[in-house]
Image 1 (cartoon, rainbow, N blue to C red):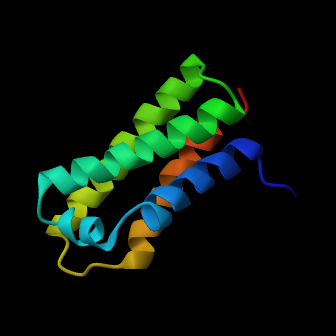
Image 2: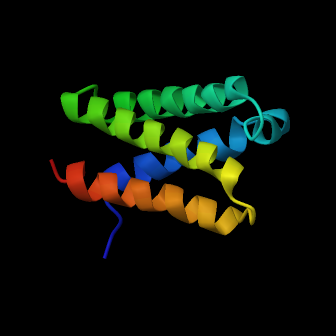
Length: 109
């Protein structure tokens, strides 16, 4: 069984946006200030736009993938503000569930 290229691209953009391009100040600040949260969402959007756009091209499907993944990513990070037990694993699982769902819906088209 192999991993579908669209899922790999989604995962790569997530890893870049959440680990390599998110400064520590943003990781902490997004829990308190809208500006950090929106900035983090914009980083994810640019990562995905660049990776998916260059690899696949900018189609209407890529446009919808971009919207769904990045709005849900920002929403998950926003909702973490209200969770008393912050779990890195559950946070990442929620993000991966979104990526898998998007791949299941649009990955084969």
